[in-house]
Amino acid sequence: MTLARLLRAWKESQDKAKAYLGDAYYDYNLVLTLDNGRPCEDRVIGNAFNRLKRNADLPDVVFHSLRHSSTTYKLKLNHGDIKATQGDTGHAQPDMVTEV
Image 1 (cartoon, rainbow, N blue to C red):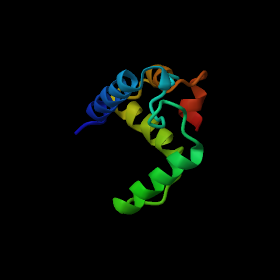
Image 2: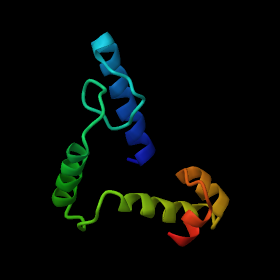
Image 3: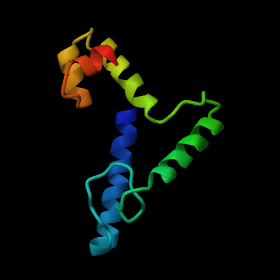
């Protein structure tokens, strides 16, 4: 299953939770939330990421490194289009893509 499909499925489950909980669901328009829509603490996400790495026998990398990997793959997919990658990743300056 692709990441896009996983995210769509996750969004559907969030929409169901919103409908079920009504006013008790706090919609901050976030992807990673608690069951009631409230933001997760960093340690909740970090603990889940550590479990995922351990269970899948993945290397011990920090969560933020996924952002760098994502940027690298975006550059490969769009054949080195720095401006497109810059916009996609939300960086204000192209040198954040080329130098970091």
